[in-house]
View (cartoon, rainbow, N blue to C red):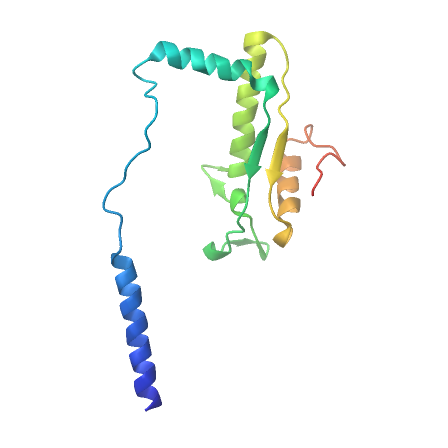
Length: 152
C-alpha cells in the first residue's frame, strides 16, 4: 500500500514537472523606444549630453546572488555571481572598465578629470563584500585604499 502511494506521488510530481516544462512564452514583445539609428543627429547630441553630465552622476551596482544553484566553487567557497568569469573578466571588472572608458572619454573631450562615485549593493551573506573588495584591490589597487570601502 505504501509503495502504491509513493508510486502515485512520484507519477504526479513527474506529470507536474512535465506540464510546467510545456509552459512557454509564445511571443516576445521588445520594449518600445527611440530608434537611434534613424535619427543619428539626435543620437549624437544625446550621447554628448550624457557625457557632459558625467560629473553630476553616480553609479549603483546591485550585485546580488551567490550563484549557489550553479554549484561553482573556488577554494571550497561559494562565489558571488558577479565574480564568475565571462569573456575573461568578471561582471564587476566589466562594469568598472566601462566606467573608466566613460571617464577617459570625458577627460579627452573636456580636459578635466571626472571621478564617478560608485555604490555596490550586496548582502553580507557568504562574505560577498570581502570578495568584491578583493577583486577591486587586485585589479585597481590605486582606486581603493584601506578604509575607503565602507559597508553598511
